[in-house]
Image 1 (cartoon, rainbow, N blue to C red):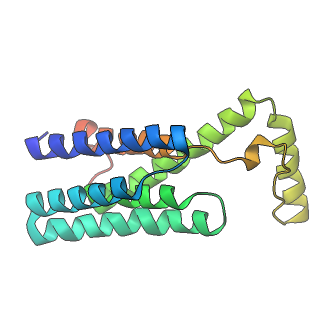
Image 2 (image 1 turned 135 degrees about the vertical axis):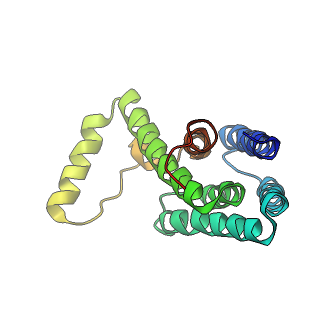
Length: 176
């Protein structure tokens, strides 16, 4: 691992840590944090790869933004989560940004499942999904269901990013 990769990874994980703390405490991810992260991610990519590196950072940013935006549009995610994933993408080459999105979605699903399980609403939630499949239509959770309440998705983004960074820097996985 090069010194540039180490610095970028430490910065990214630090920024994500601040985002998680803010999300847990205030249910908000500050725009200033996102802007600073975007600037650092793009600057780091440009420093290490020149114009090509900047292109990689911009492409990673667009991948994170574009793949999370539909979930925001459908009401399944807050705008801060979309912006945070775009920030993560600015630090990563495009193929690792894709993996970070993929792992973040997996972690989000696992976190949601665990919340429903711990709160004792697994059967209720599965029953609603069964009804949706039969009706072939979306049915929003009722006001008492934990499945309808937001959770700090920044945790899933942090875990998904850690997965991607691990494979990129340590295991050298996923090709590319």
